Each structure stands twice: as structure tokens, then as C-alpha cells.
Length: 354
Image (cartoon, rainbow, N blue to C red; front, side, top):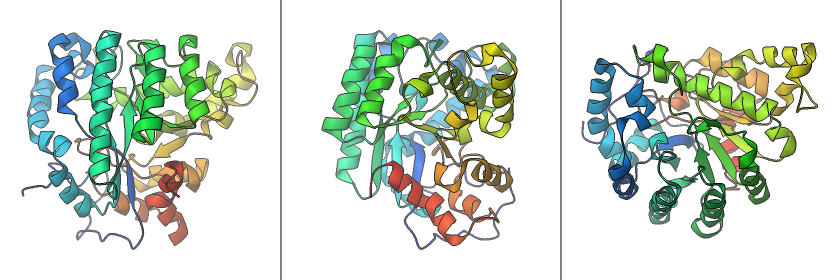
């Protein structure tokens, strides 16, 4: 069907008997992606396959599938008309559009990455300006150069009106908790802008080449490591007012958080840079709903609070959930007010749209 996204219902839960109806409340998808071709044209001459984990850590079968899917989904990544049709089908009033992780361009020389990031952010801002009632945006920043990253952070907030910025879970193998990035974290806190942390496959994934494991296992594992480092390396301690949103329900850590509190109490090397239990920092972060099953979402809500959960799809990728409204509705412990908060109210506050 023209305009329909290529992936529909998740096999992680029973399919609905009929097309779910949009709730009578404002709905926001805080996690979806838009590709900016003009930025890709800048980066393409400098690209080699060893720069992209999805290519490096995949067998031939997976690479073939990925190549075909890239062709299939490109209209949905680049064409607003396709996107609006799909949003209506999913019951989404407003999307937060975000560049795909491969458009972070950390592997580029910093000056070229800066130019590409400017193109990404200008492209996102243009989409928002053209249809402001359906889109807001998270921009891109060249974290391989802190001064450039800060400059683009400020431009994005003050000139383009971006609602936040996506960063990856590492910068060419360097931790996002590295002290060289402290000025970036300080500026993000000063500007009170939202930082969305999204993985791009695992950094050393020789064991993940089959079965699409570098995405299935590697993506949540990357987020898990990055969040551990932000907590244990003291970033969240030094910058207590940071606003951080985690993709894919935060990876594995939110489901096994007792272990980090245990090591903090059991060992001196588990508390070298933090004064409070690690989960106290984790509970300050926001999590999206891209976890596929109502029991997993229910657990996150119970542990971290309804107010810390925001709805997402990961559109238009195959590992997304294109029936997010239904997923929230299936959590049997939520009342109507809680559901409305997750469907859009929490994101509206987080995006400062009130």
C-alpha cells in the first residue's frame, strides 16, 4: 500500500484483532528518525565500510537484508508525505524527528562533521518550520570536537529552536563520560536542553555477526554500558540537572538495576566518584516505550514512575513498534490519566511544549 510503513505489527505480542483507534488525547512519538540527504552527500566521499558497525559486524545475509531495507524505507525516512500517512495510521499527532544514528558522523574529520551536522540540523529545522503542528526535532552535534559540539548545541537551541540533541553511546570508542566532554555536559545543563542517547551497534561485536545480534543484543548493551559510565564516572553527580532520555527503554540496566546498587555498597571501587546509590541517578533519566511487551513496560513504570516514561516507535526501522498506543493501553495497572501522560503528556512537558 502506498505510504504504508514496511513493518507493521510486532511479533513480540499478539496482534490486535482490528486496527487500534487513536485515543482522544494528544499523542507524541518522541523517538523516530529522519534522514537528511544533503548531509549524506557531504559525508559520502569520506565513508568506508569499517566506519559503520552495521556493516562491520554482520554476516553476508544480514548485510543483504539491510541493503534491501535501506531501499525500502528511504521514502519513509526522507518524504514527509509518506510520514504523515504513517503517523495517522499509528495514531500519532506529533513526532520528534531525529537523525538516524549513522548520521552522527563521528568518524568524519571534525570540520567536515561540523558542516554535515549543520546540514542535518538545518534540514530538520526546515521540516519543523514547514509543519510545526506535526513535528519537533532533536539535532546532531559533532562530539569528536568539543568546541564545535558546543557551538552547534548553542546554534541549535538559540537559532533553530531544536528541542534536544541526539548523541551516540560512544565517540569512536571513547566513553561519553570522558572528562574531555565535561564542557559539553556543562553547556547542555546550562541550556537545559534534552540529550537523547541512542546506540549504533556494539563497538566490539565479533560474536554478534549472526542473527542481527549487533542490533538485537548490541544496541541495548551499548546503551547499558554508556549509562553505567555516566553514573559511575560521576557525570550525573557533577551535572545533577542534566535532562537525559534513553532509547529502547534504557537498554538492559533498568531491568537489572539492583546489581549497581549492590556493588556500590559492597566494594570501594564501586563508589569512587559518586556519593549516592547508583539508581538514584538512573531514576533521574527518562525512558522510551520501545520495549515491545506490556509486562516489560509495566515493570519500567513500576520501578521508575509513570512520569519518566515517554512513547516512542523507532520509526521507520524494522526494530520499531508501530502500534505504541496499543502497547501503553495493554498495561493493566495504568488508569486513564497515566495512559494519557505516557501517550503524550510526559513528552509535552519534557519537550517544553506546555
